[in-house]
Length: 287
Image (cartoon, rainbow, N blue to C red; front, side, top):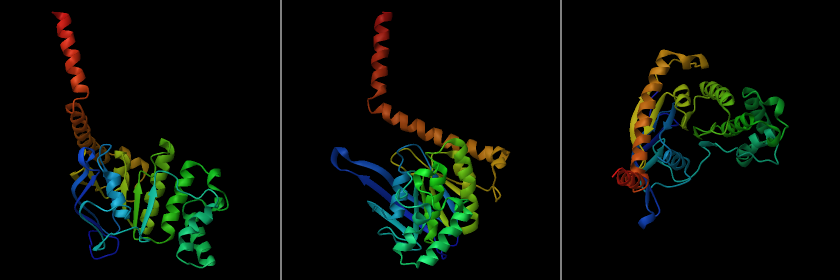
């Protein structure tokens, strides 16, 4: 799958991101290099605040890196584009539009004819099991259904890449499992390049071809893990020995970084100072 001449190849080269200046300066990401091959599903996991969403926003063109390069098909990314579909955790649907009109929106902005817009929207809604709800409004849908509409809307403009930032983070656990299955089924059909941000390790394993693990801030690449599980995948696979072995490995990597992040915070004089004071007080009482 690592064909860097085909469409949909993402590459980050020694990318760094700094926010603020002076005593407010924060190094969010430090010299991150990674790639997503055309048609590949890649997830990024790591402790909170490690810069996962920052990387996705750079690829989306919403922000420019402080140093390094972000490329799509060998060209520098300098802003948003129709070649990248983006799905966030928040349901970014227009509440005054019907489900079908929401899906058609991007096509309308591209000047696609009404008949073709309707055909495309209804076809994709059918694949997502939502055709019966095409005339409903977002406030009439469940959270999982809203997110399905968001994914379908992102697919409607035929992007080369899908960028997904915790898209299932607001869903309950049962709905989340269903959405993971729907997403992997749709990815199997369209084979877009996907860059997926998640805190859920099991989700990353189930969906991905490869998983990048990031360090605590400043975010760097700690490990790159290939997920050599057969496709198509289903929920039963999550109880297999192979899945469990990968899960154990990734959990250990994340645990190391979470502890490192906590240790960094303690060494900044927070709870560590408190612990020292408490310990001293205890010694005095003992004396």
